[in-house]
Image 1 (cartoon, rainbow, N blue to C red):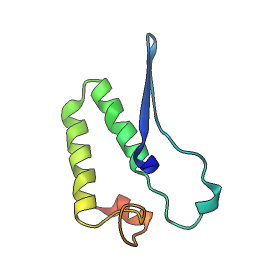
Image 2 (tube, one colour):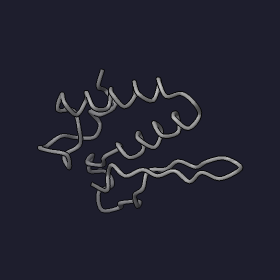
Image 3 (cartoon, one colour):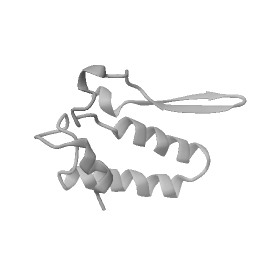
Length: 88
């Protein structure tokens, strides 16, 4: 799924981490965007800077939200993206 895509561009001077997506103006304001790619890019950044334990905790928390049914509608069923940030 494109929404889960993330990427890293390592260079000699540093690295850039990003969620791969467009601006998606067709879904703006509809509360259906999937922020998972951005979160996973952050996880990759944490690994890159030597914070693998923290990255693992964030990744596992993200997986738990999906298991608990807190996710955007593109994963399965009807959900809204505002719930992703309120998961505990």
